[in-house]
Length: 135
Image (cartoon, rainbow, N blue to C red):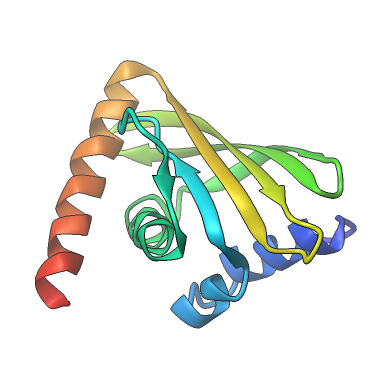
């Protein structure tokens, strides 16, 4: 995907690239807030956001993941995505806001349908546990 604002293009370059932790880390502000579809409180800070986005990249980032619609407002973007997990079509939205330095300061994810959210929740929980055991 090309022709987007510099902030969003950096995100797409990382998504379509190697998904490296270093490439993600430079994009996140230290005070970034991550809002999960399955956790009722905002997750604050770079370390927890890195964990969630890394786990998401490893569970949702398979061959079926794709952004289907993009709304790019420069310092904010809404990205609709879909993927298949365990035979369930998962449809979701990433809402991203960047600070004046071009770092992500707010990342919200919404997922539907309920069966899809349950599949995401189970896969993310397992991946986060696996990552925790490696640390």
